[in-house]
Image (cartoon, rainbow over all chains, first blue to last red; front, top):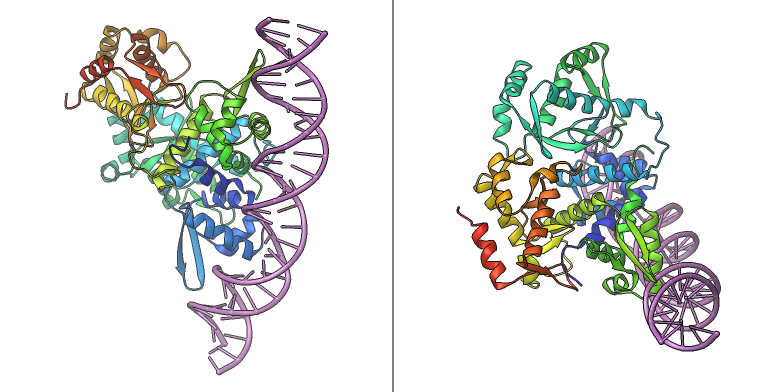
Length: 228
Length: 228
DNA sequence: TTCATACTTCGATCGTAACCGAAGCATCGC
DNA sequence: GCGATGCTTCGGTTACGATCGAAGTATGAA
């Protein structure tokens, strides 16, 4: 009867709409203050405070006080993966808060998923990397090929240093808007960082969407063609 | 604000202890009646009935009426994966309903995880398959090698027919008791089935544990040696 | 020191959902 | 037909937790 991990606790933590909204907002990867999170949760600061305390003691959030602000982030990448996988699941069941129409077109085109690129552009990038033979889709997983390592070095990404990290290089992550996989893992992070560094795109202050500049858009589409 | 899938709904569904227990029980893969599920949930039949109705309308359960019984199963494999991934997550955080000690040794040794083998034996099997070169662990995923295909045929598993299925052949699944990966996917299912068919092991009526016969135990350990 | 901002804690209200007893259907065996 | 079993629906109670106003604490700015 009472065997195994307690799913109900974390289910209940995520099960409150206000808390779920906060967690989803933090999936954007950047640290947010209690006041900001109260905003996305649609609740007052007092209520948010108790919610945040619960989430923290439940191990889902980490906080870092800085001056009189209190910045919250997801506790680690495992939490981010859990939230994303629940999003993918919910999207597949049609549990949408919104009509799935093109209500937030920028968000569907390109957004940040914890630390890597998601949305139409994220899916396109992975498709293109697979089509060009830079990444092998083998079974359920992804693996970088030698050709891919060379190609990436050419656009300024040093795969060697990424390999030394404990975190997997390539990981596939289900995209809730496209319902297809995009590239996560340390390589996914490095690629997004490089786009931002190059000035091709920038993060927005309020939302999780990634805005490409006209020039960045052109470069991105050239670098990751479909039907390659 | 209101963008994306609704995590809170499914979180709330899983967040109730009675419902969580039922879902965890159904992770055992076999269909259970409403009365049985009431038992694992620790509630009366009436209460269970309303819970089950909610889970079904939430898309987590499927039911099949047979005579005057009503059999419930998880709606599909995606639900099973979600539950398992939440279990893995909860175990990693120390959210245990039980002390993590060897309280249920049989369960930790070998149990069913939806339709494949988990626990110490499940992890051992995958380790051994990788060590012998039957399965390649590449990046985040698993892939069957040619050698593996031959080895499996020799113990009576026709990989060809499995390949034709839409379901992935190999998938890695995080084991919550061992905190390491075991083999899921259609191959994981086929392997467990073959053990049961051969009479090496049998499922228990009440729990998710898999009981190996003395002879089956011997054969299994011989077939999947460690330090091979 | 004083005021303002950021946040937490307290206290009280309120709504919802979990729960079970009892009654109502449906199906099976006879 | 009859009773028994498996399950659902109804009604009413209860308990928990989400919520916010108000007051309290901490940090920074003037």
